[in-house]
Length: 138
Length: 473
Image (tube, rainbow over all chains, first blue to last red; front, top):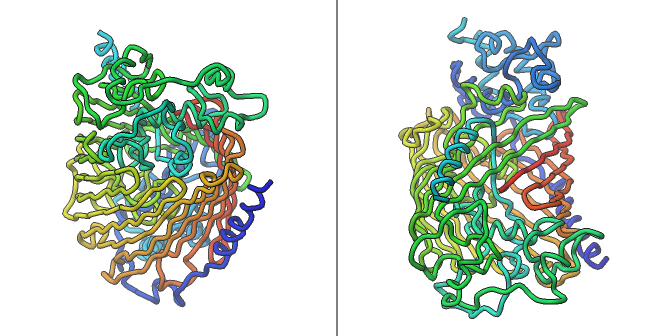
């Protein structure tokens, strides 16, 4: 019991400090530094982000939800029409580009308590979409 | 003959390593906690205190892990800790202070440590250790280098474990389940197979092969974009006075608290995410851990931030270079350290980064058996170059409190917070997690966490339940 009593101040300190921390900054990244992301992002730059942050779930065949014994990432969140994009595939990345931007800018993806994308990563993908999703498969 | 058979087994394991995987790292809370009693890491005879330069007692990562930077393959002391202290049911002698800390109705104090009749026995000094070589019975370690060194581990100090094997094979396998937003996801998170070759004293080679895990399931884990790769591959000269070492090859630079949670922002924000090939560098590192003070310093070349390095060609690096320094003091009840890592590279390879952090642990348990708590914390500040070339300020911190209720039953509350760009509004976020770890028998850890991410805009806050089974040997 003594251990628990002494633990309480530590716990309280952690919680107070944790929730008392506020971020800084006053403007979104594209106003703070318009060149923070390239004006003409390449497909490779977009792919690198998706590869590290999205592909661990959004990859593989989307026509068979049960190919892994009943568990499939596609069930985690379908971005459009109840289908899940294969973000290793250029055609599907382009096809779902709008949904990707919506999901990441609204912080709905990555899901749960997974860290969200940074402002620079979001800005780069948005500009790529605004530029018409230039990609080798277009 | 046994060695030959072991090499065959190693070959089979390498083939098996071409399978799954992601991120096996160390648990710094174990290091902080293990300082509490000596017999957590080796049996406790009346040992003659050796000269300072010959002491192997320290609370550095290299006490329990072959890689001095931490993570993966375990040393004999690490394996002993995993058998004696960590689990609910110990298979090596339980530390004396833990005899009454078994889970009610469980534990092995009456078998592994029949303390009513006798204490574990071992050599009292270096000279006596050779007499214990015949007592070794260790099915996962083969051979002992010829000759002797006062700076390596001794026979008899780790029960029947081989203290300093010529060849050892180990592994870390993690199977994860994530429940988020009502959907269930099961996936292989890690499948690492490591081999340590130690043919003569002072020479060690470590090869750790793993593959990136894939949450979409088992059949998708191996493909072109998630191929297996050398997670670590280096040669090292070690077992020198003050536990001095030098290594060269592919590794993750030593920096701060090396958590096993690769999504934690004190790792991810600084390109130290243990699950990613991009976190690996090609370099040299030197270090030492002389009982209390320690340091690790490295110089390295790396691949572009935007490109995966070649899985097998460890010399696949680009133009940039980096350096890291990690130093501090690890005492019995507390530790404090400071780390810095810098990278210099062209903008199109990721630009320059400068990071500085302080970290530490506090182990009140060392001061009172009634407070079985361990505290860990780290604060990092840094700059990263944006595409424009301008610098953005970063701030990240982490705190963790562990409460070991009984041996093998640990509760955790942790929080990590990040502001990845100090000039940008509403891009900071914090994550709190509550959970526990259960180690019933050596080699099997169950970990369960409820995690809550709070983003600055409140839009997109998320909660999940993360479960994992970690098999380690």
